[in-house]
Image 1: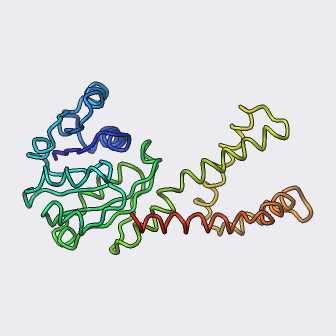
Image 2: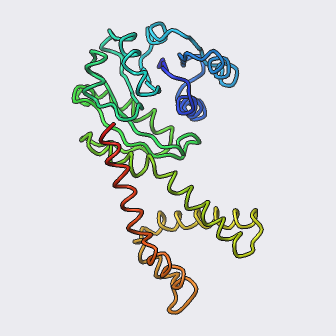
Image 3: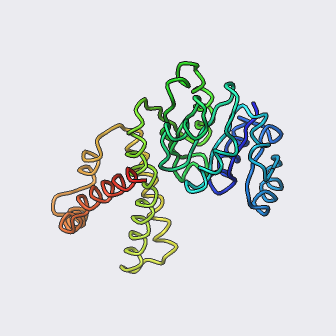
Length: 264
């Protein structure tokens, strides 16, 4: 399988790394096209993949074309690579660009649209994806499933509306988690812990807690109650969070992100 990446930025590089690490593809089967000579040199040096500065040449012999560019650059790029063969599949991770826009811009029926998140950079992300009816009918989606599975977990949906929702939840989600971690670490420092110790305590607490949710399958509220003793320290902390509107603020933040995603 020959894979062409159009765009060799952070997410493009992350996908290359995961595909190679997972032995989904070999270096000689991957070519990356990017306008930055420095990025091309880095990708060639670090991963041994082919590099080009010509999008049309990059896709000529590819079975799969992965679009990993900024939305504002996509119209020009689609014009450059238009005229793909029916045996070729396009996978786009470009934010906010619909299947219909991709199909129209490329004049091509076999297109997959995906929304990976930042942890995919180390193979522990989650990607929600969908595909055109033609792609599903010809069973070309299995190729996309293999590629996206190298980034972590993947979820296929048959309705594109869920991608904007996932953008607000799992796409932007790492930023919410990082902010929470940052605040907890600062809280530890505020009460007297050394910063390194506070950081280690918070990271392991976050990791362990999410694993408990995953492994037990219990509702988070039930698990929270197991940690919350009447009149105890946890009760006092949760009271302050609820007073500050923690839960409603988080819901409103995700809703605002979803509204923004719908406008892209």
